[in-house]
Length: 74
Figure (tube, rainbow, N blue to C red):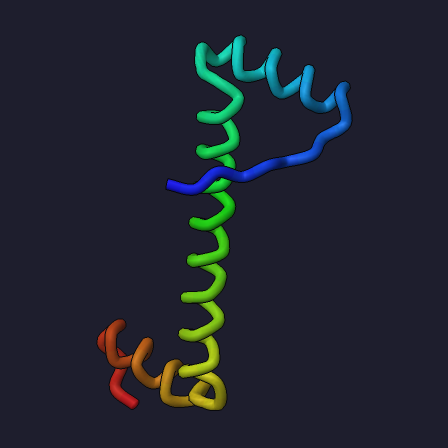
């Protein structure tokens, strides 16, 4: 496990402490959960961009597959 020093304005730190207290957790846990959400969003965007790049220029093929899946004869 690594340690991270984060410099925040005092008022923001106080608000984070209040938020953590209202959720019954610590500031450390709160920031860990926020980091997890940010990483998940980044991973999802990365996967989407990779899939979009793989499908680039294949619009006609994609539409034909959708027609086939719906039972249309093309």
